[in-house]
Image (tube, rainbow, N blue to C red; front, side, top):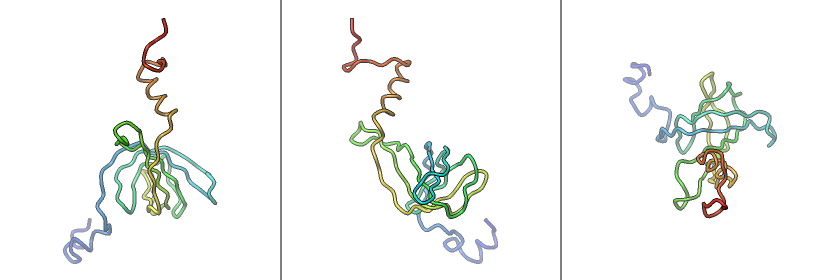
Length: 138
């Protein structure tokens, strides 16, 4: 930040953000939407998030103003056992080769699919599915 701007304007006015940012780093899958249809998609990682916006890495710069849908694996389990994902819907405010800033217009939490959970469990088990109850047939 320009030191002169900081001295003249004061800390509060020099900082544009009005809400606190949290350094949450999670994988993110994003879709670029046009008339509610996916026209591009990619993967990245969240850098930080606030109640009003999110900064995340992207595969390529995103066009300013485009609508996006973000799916983020949430690090906390619902009721201690159900994996969650945070869905964010918004528009791109800034973008460069390193990432994009999105203004959050709405968000919702969803449970992650059972298939995704099963795939993770299978991967942990060395690629073998275990029958219900954890015992293999004799």
